[in-house]
Image (tube, rainbow, N blue to C red; front, side, top):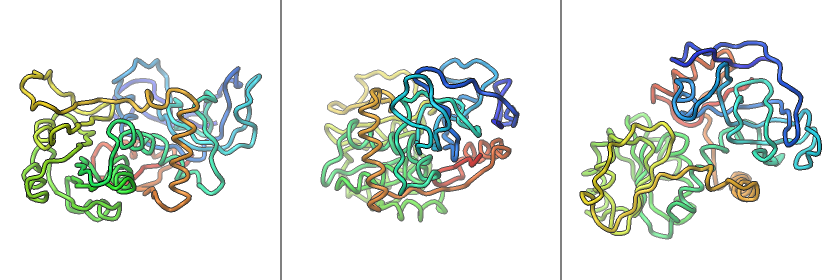
Length: 321
């Protein structure tokens, strides 16, 4: 079967399509035909050799949806022919993937594979941010950086579903419509470090209850300055621009800073199933919409990484093997 393979870390040119053979599934594993693989910014960090150590050669990608082809001994969680979706399954840029069944969730027939592949990483991240990291309540004001991105659009929709108000930030005017379509009450345009005054004008000086920021260092000071008493700055994303060490006594008092990992919130299969079912239900009921920005073949993985690194895309990028 064909897969995107890397034999070195580096720029997008280190990826190529090769024929590889996967082992038969062992205990606790399933072999899955990949119908759609989600592209995430964290994949570019893996490609560059950042984050957790990875051995070469490797196939990037950790998210997708497909059909179970075979199961290992004593596996009962899934059966051959099941439609499934997953997150944090390495090697997803491929026609087939060998997955731990603990990371597979049943996919309802009402949800297509592309939609499922756009939900798992970004949908679970956004869901945990608005439910567990800071539980959005009616009337809360949330400021969302990079609101036109996959996580940003998910956050915006979920905040509105929970009764909050959304001020979204985009870097360019051509991204405004996507954020408005997601339900944002207001949109500001500019770099992460240049919009605090715009936000305060919109709120007539009222500071916000929560800032969701996947960008990192550039907007950190402005994000902190926007927080009301007991406000929360929720940082997310494994490869954001690193923030320099902070003198806690230089910060405003009575605020919270947090850097959560989605893995910690769905570390049990029960938690993963519960949160995934809630996401799928929202989609089926028409309450949550995914936006597929672009679709690529395996051979176009290099272009896909160039596109996502350009920060010019909107919505979710998908590989259809």
